[in-house]
Image (cartoon, rainbow, N blue to C red; front, side):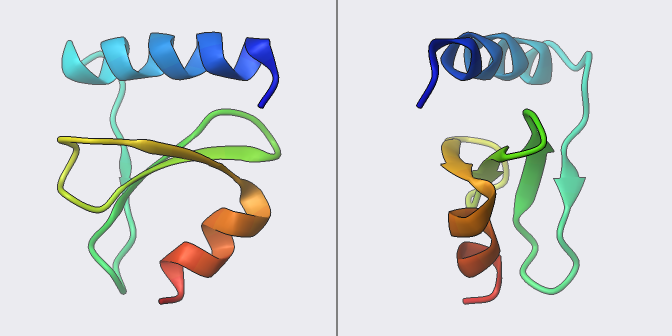
Length: 65
């Protein structure tokens, strides 16, 4: 994962905890999602308590499970 994505991940986690950004809820699964860039996403399966950063391809497979 590129360093700029790691930095963005830390920034977005902080902003989410502070309530300055909101995650998107995926209707079918109930997971939360935050878009980091065109190719990277953050996904939470436990209502925002923990986040995993993954490529868009891996993200697509995770939300269809």
